[in-house]
Length: 380
Image (cartoon, rainbow, N blue to C red):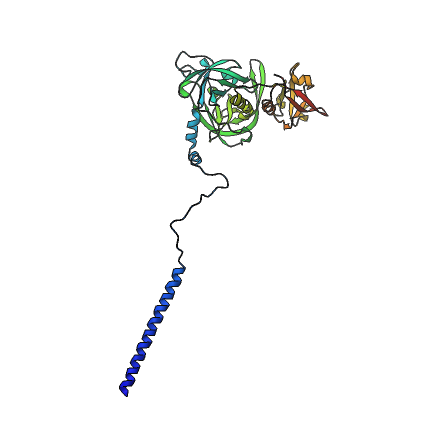
């Protein structure tokens, strides 16, 4: 009887042990199952989608441009800077050992791939003058002045060439004092051709008085810079670090160091665009010479300076010209041309350069306490 009881107890232990093993296996299996389901499995055959920038798509070309240093940009810009002389040298290049004063050596900048070059009138001579041009690669060309304006000391020269490296024009209306700029030119002659100097924009809308051989004139709306400008730099570009031309170097004050001036590029843009698109420019004339508020303190104008707060002051009206024929008089103050507000004489020039002879414009005139509109038919 005792043996039978022990046998039953042994069988019960085996069953209990087996059940415990099964329970442990089940628990482990359940744990593994839950854990496996929580693991994120990524399919290696995934697809990608290009993220679009909300500002500007990054292309290979743009990345390469951004990787350029200022030195790289200036080195490229120098390729579009040329030497200009009024006198032809007997050597293979105007960049000879002759001095700047002997050759009248100056600078220009190529503005189109087919050979239009921007410079100063005092470097190239007036319209229809001949000059001589040497490119960065040493090639020489005969140049013809196709346009010039002595009042702003700018000119455009044409040479017969194609596929030239040319400079990109910036926006001179938005320049800010303190911005970094570089001047490129040919100071003093051969030894220092294509010199690059750096500085900042020191001031805007400067007016300077020019006295030459008993003649007095005023250059207005100039960009002042402390980048070194010497006589041979005349006609060369004033550029931003990105290579955009914002001005054409013109003069420096000889009695002071670090004061040079450049003509804002926007003045001449309409003319450049016309030559680039049509190969010609039909210049319209309004027949007045006017000053802005920056010039009036230099002049003997009685009480005008105290009353003249806006617009441009008509100092001279061309006899029998378009403005005189329409009724414009000296001492009139022009505040607008069509819908364009006038703050400087260059504002008027820039607008007139977009017009053609026989186009009509409306001038808003202040004549004392009288305000009136005068329609002027532009002449040649």
